[in-house]
Image (cartoon, rainbow, N blue to C red; front, side, top):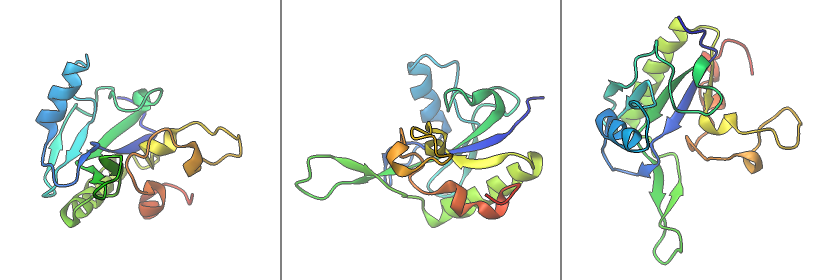
Length: 161
């Protein structure tokens, strides 16, 4: 069994309201050369939870952290830019109420299976460029999952962060 120290939350980086699931992400990941979907779990817009890669297999979702983590992805993460804006989309927390409820339940279950694992966002795995011991927004390589995972799920963390 793998030693799981992290549960890493991701977004699919798809536009708000675009309803896809694990099968479509699997297709995209295979097209990029992955053996299969990189995430272990996917949470759809309606709150349905779909299994991706089996948990006993190493994921392919966060460089340098796959061996000891579980990857969870919610569908969404991009909001259309206002009319006339040069960018088409911006990172945003687009979780539906159903996704929020399903994520809470899934993370509780994962926390029970892996009680010492920290629950973090993909952006929290960015390097600490100024070496102050904290990853701050100016250091994020990615915005994913587009909200503060550590703060939102602090009640599920193994220790007070």
